[in-house]
Length: 443
Image (tube, rainbow, N blue to C red):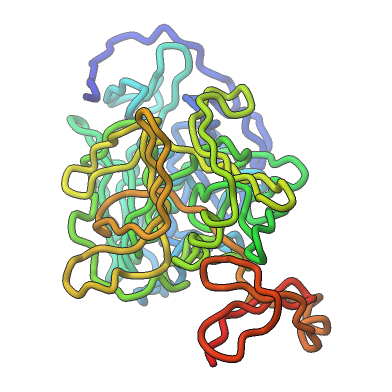
């Protein structure tokens, strides 16, 4: 449980950044995240000093609003989008709006204290410290959602990039006595504190993946992390998702804030709440069946010397290899992480055929004494499971339009993934084309 401490004197180093350029910040590393030491001011710039309030922003909007006085032209329409779009990112280049997972990490591994006069500046706020490094967040208040009226209280409100629903998003909120995460309406105006954008190596960009071909289905080599991004390496476990939802939940730590114990019943997981990068989609049960039927499956306790457990799928014909980590999963009724390193589920896009069960389809990997992998299991949609995407054959980028217009069938498979000697004359089957696409056919 997070502990709060009161400090009269502070024994950590305070950086002198008064003379720094507005787009440059030294950053402070807390846990796995590098945090800016100053708030955002005008779009694309930091304030001069840590105690400066900076500007307020509405969620996923680029307009900067004053933190004092009255304003005109306030936009009280609901912002569009399911994430904070890059074009609307008010952080300087190389920085981004933090996710709720990064804010949770900050709260989990630091102690924080209220200070009413930050180093004689007259500014009140909270200091977060991990014992070595520290960050000061000024309490600047906020602007209300209807007309942008200023609430100049001694509270701090800071946006995350994580959407709660189409009218609200997650924030960091604190006052003189409490610090917590909260959900507030996305047309209100809040402060902004950026985090460093992670650098990516070649072929590990957030939405780019080389893919592995398993009988015509192209599987991503890495799990989904934050929505619409892949993790850096195949052994990285990524984030967990409740079925049909776009909120990413961390693998580690406890969760007792805003877990959705009874997600809305949908009958397909569409791109409205999609979590796969552009050009990728969630697998269906047929994709999982092809994977299981056409691969030799083995278990590892230490994939690539990373210490990560999971299942290795090796294609029986060409030895293509796919690794799926097994980090455990979160129970829908408690949000508790269970069966770490023993059991994991990977969501399908398909709702269970049984009406009113609240279940959706998934791939199950389970290993105690013997490895079991099943492609046709179901789990309650409130559970938090992993996501591994497959290439969306219906998505055609501009450079592939010409090749998609002319295609020739090169192979036929049963729904279980067995290669057929010729095209069937009746029934269901899969046809694979020479341009790398495939489709299910019924005759």
